[in-house]
Length: 135
Image (cartoon, rainbow, N blue to C red):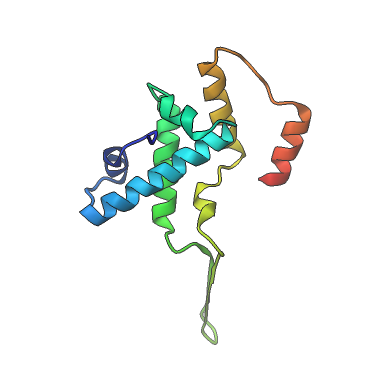
């Protein structure tokens, strides 16, 4: 079960979806939930058992889906030049970047999970260093 609903995404986008778009958003919600669970070092079973879903995780899930929808083609760069007109587009090999959490988003997930477990855990210096290499 995803952390958010198609209705949540539609509300965030300020529009309603067609049936086809609803199916697509449903799949994207599952991907976003899996990415959040992975950042929390948890599995799909954990994500499915989380009831109620913390608002911060629900919101992050909606934002990840919005990110994927905004760049569905996986565009990585776009450049234009006016003198001697030049136009260039670059695409990534996959669209997984939309579901890759940045350092701040990973910290949000860790804090939310820590609050669920009623424990306060700060990242070790090694985790902070490795996180800096990834982001």
